[in-house]
Image 1 (spheres, rainbow, N blue to C red):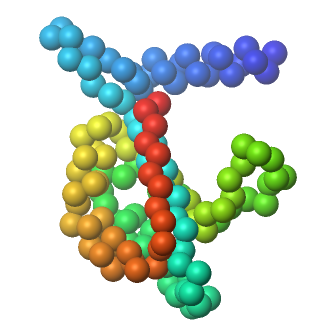
Image 2 (tube, rainbow, N blue to C red):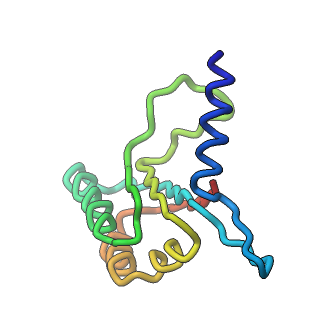
Length: 131
């Protein structure tokens, strides 16, 4: 019963948002995207600086093409070979389409926030997903 409900919801969601739609010219428009960013902060940051880093996410949230923005720390899940909880923060941002994420990447607020906070992290990984 639960599986059938999940499949029905997925089919309705996919149909309603047009995840991949083709117009008469056979051009493809990509639908919603999830932008996941993993941050490893520098080891020498004190607690005050680590708390200050949260302002990076708050600044990004002002960008108008963002649909949703969430951030957090690794969950204390059970250790398994496939789980990597070595990061300090994860940012998850959703966009309506490729145009919006392209605007975000070069948006002055995004670029200024990176410039302001880039000295806080030692490593960043980005993983973008089309829904």
